[in-house]
Length: 254
Image 1 (cartoon, rainbow, N blue to C red):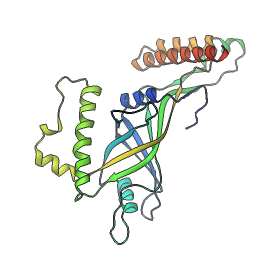
Image 2: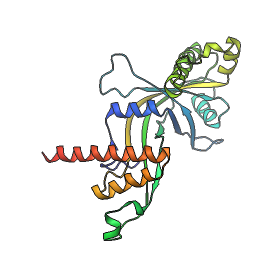
Image 3: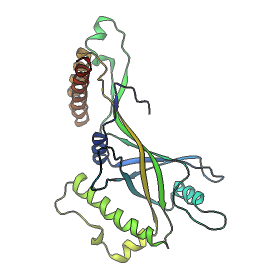
Image 4: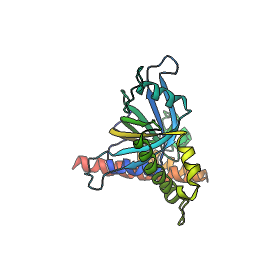
């Protein structure tokens, strides 16, 4: 992802908050295989974990699960299983996980109320926010390995609690153990656990903050005029990121 300086976000706390608010991430793997594409991607929800004594610089780990029938998972398992049947857990190449913000939108040149009338030198673009994560992926795929069961037994309730409470806002959330134990055990055999040790991460808030105040105000007004929830979300984010850019600019000149 192209992280132009004016759009880049490197604050770890901000990036962690973005992932927790938008837990559906697309994992991309690069695996040599005679049977599957070299590059494969899947959307799965993730839970971000940090140790209790985490330092400000700790990037954390992502935990999730994928369907065993997924061709991407089949490629993972094939790479992790040697011809003699020996198994390892960590993929040889790093993976990429991409998280997108809840709102993104086309920006028409008509929004640029300062530059368009004066010079006409304007073109359309698209505003969005995203966070990319790179890391080492460990795959818990051996159904007979107690560590696979241990991983899934922790990850599934944790992810469910996050989604039921933070995403849905329920005070009385559904719990994994609300389902019959035998049913859960059967379904666990059909999935594999994935843990990504984050080695690098960065964010991009492309929200018109590079524009002059007049054009940026036009973008905010234009989004608000759409009268939609997405428009209101975009207008607020453009305003917030514009104000942040102005503060950063002021601090750099002091």
